[in-house]
Amino acid sequence: MRRMALATCASVFAVAALSACIATAQQPQQTKSPQFEVASIKPGKPQPGFDSRSSGGGPGGQYRMENVPLRQWVKMALSVNDYALQAPPWLDSTRFDLIAKLPADKPVDQNAMAGMMKSLLIERFGLKWHEEAGTVSGFELVTDKKILLTPATLLERLGHGGRGWGPTAINGTNMSMPELAEMLSDALGKKVVDSTHISGGFDIKLMWRPLDDAKAEEEKRNGIDVDNLPSTVFTAVREKLGLRLQTAMVPSQIIVVDNINRQPTGN
Image (cartoon, rainbow, N blue to C red; front, side, top):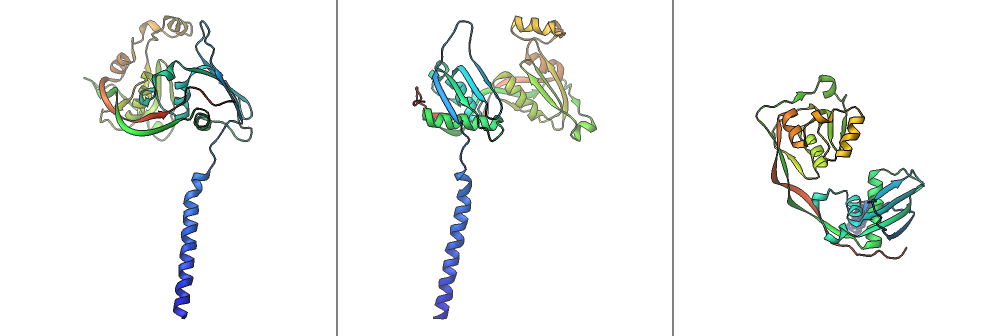
């Protein structure tokens, strides 16, 4: 009888412990997703000479999007590059305005903004998606005839360095080849993978001529010798680094939009 009682107590404690473990495991899923305090969505109003724009303030401020294609909303919400997003083509031509109030009790960084956009699209547009491994049209970064890379200094390898990039420039110290490939992906709007098999960190300084003549003139006024810059990023990579970008089908995680409604639910 005593043995039976002890066995019963042990079972009770085991069930209680299991329940506690389950509750602990489920806890992260109960965390509430970040949300805009208030959000008003209206159809975009195309205007001659005006494409789209976004602006926002700090905590408790207002965030606005004007005439922005719905595809951009999805890219922002899911933190996905254009080349890795499979979505209905009508998202490119369907535009909306957004006026939203940001939370007042917490700072709003890029991750928080993505979370709020994700919550908004799920609630108001019925967004559903899944991820899958696949391949996309992109580039491989490979070595050319003569490598011209400059190794990082000892101080830079110890962590004294930085990164910077723009539409026609990539700069960095102690940069690895995978990091360079990632920045080239942003510049080209296509996936770039490192196939150089080169390890270590390097000082990278790349600039190339803007395709837009008005932008080139602006760079000239800022003191940049645009006329002597490489004509494209491909030329810059080859001439300045001794590397080459070659077209290839490259592996990438792909986000597939399973559902998104053409119109949002009411404000």
